[in-house]
Length: 258
Ligand code: CAA
Image 1 (tube, helix red, strand yellow):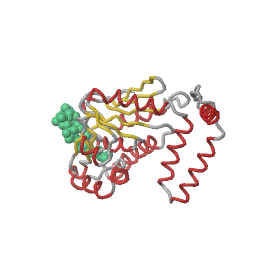
Image 2 (cartoon, rainbow, N blue to C red; image 1 turned 180 degrees about the vertical axis):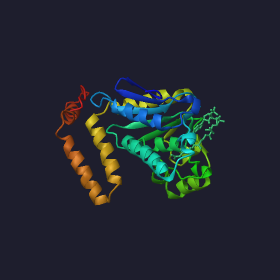
Image 3 (tube, helix red, strand yellow; image 1 turned 60 degrees about the vertical axis):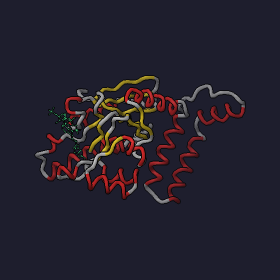
């Protein structure tokens, strides 16, 4: 992969978008590399993913404006679908994905972070959907996910005004869960990932699925989704070990992802 690196540390997979000359902007090649990185994740061993950007200035400065500048209507729609398909894959990836937003998260950068389960950022992070200033709409899910995360009124204000917001405001409106000094961001992301990775993996995955699938339907259906995923856990070794450990007043020996 030319524009993405993937490494694994203690059950945590770290995907880094690495195109610093263009502030990690997403062109088709970067989107293809991200797809390939996801294909390479070994779900038997990796329990959490962290997504970040290379360098100290930018997470992702958006979709590549140069590549988009001459697109036709059909090509624009296809480019939107390419990003949407990939981001939906991230959103529905079986294990949790943490976005460690280390600088600019504009347009497609804000959008890819919103396809992750959890966003944390450095104090130099800047979020925004500047698309209407370029004559386009957000095209990689921004019109849909921003409203779901920060509420319709705030999402419309950000998108219609194309105004960027800094880390503290992103925190205030609930777009990120926490803000860290730059050098503490990756350690914090890894610590959070390790905390998640310690828990029963099938249970964690089922929680992700229950929350995601439940949010797409009405409460009665959503609770049925939860009941099924809850029930599935009782067929696992990890449920037996987790509950036995509690009842025997001992620590869990190991969750085995089965
Ligand atoms: N696409 C392509 N190239 C980009 C880029 C982008 N989104 N963002 C930055 N770059 C490139 C710049 O062109 C520049 O390249 P050169 O050195 O070859 O000139 C390099 O990255 C460094 O950028 P700047 O010199 O502009 O750096 P800066 O510190 O002065 O400004 C910035 C940083 C405020 C992020 C500014 O680069 C910027 O505004 N970028 C564009 C942000 C944007 O509008 N993103 C949304 C794109 S549209 C989108 O994402 C649509 C969608 O929803 C799918």
